Image 1 (cartoon, rainbow, N blue to C red):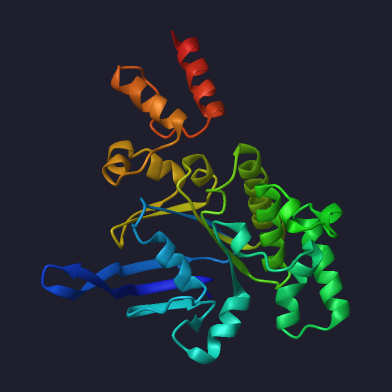
Image 2 (cartoon, one colour; image 1 turned 90 degrees about the vertical axis):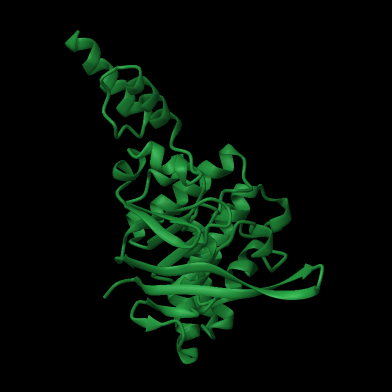
Length: 288
């Protein structure tokens, strides 16, 4: 069974706009005929420029939005079935861009307990889940802290812990590092990768940072509501001109290799990391 499967997924909404003739309704199509399959345990990255539809897609996985066309299943559950919404939200947890919007309590451990309490979990099990979640994101020593005293990266790790305490099979992260400094970004990405690698949790990361995107198993690119590219990071980022045409960047080292190739230097087209660049340059030097 697929963790997430979208078949012909479409989403349109109506926006009121002011014109010279008064208020008019304008239909906006945010997603159109999107087909995506995500396996259990995968680390998936979704890319797209602002307004491309990637966050709209993310919200469908958590049933915050429902399709106006097509179908999206989470672990076999149709997100349009009202009686399945609670189960879907337990299966696919959501972490948003601004952790302050997700933290609800005045003490860290109480915030993490909030979800399990609403699920009706017994107190002893809640205590165990809170402790386990804090340990998993390496924030155990901050259990009694006030969230407002934490750094941005720490807050986001607490937001992730709050989702973990509900025991999801999948976590959807909608630009979780967008508001963080480099240290906070590193903390959060290390946490995400560890959850995927050690806990087997399916990760769906929405991001505009290309150095984060290269860490995924597969990359999907959405442009103006359409799925336009999909493949392994090396396959996607080798297509520098195509990505730029969609308003996206590539990792800095990939861009450097691309420019060097244009100057006639024989480098591979799928370099993603500094280590790969150094290795390619050393091989080139030894061949001279």
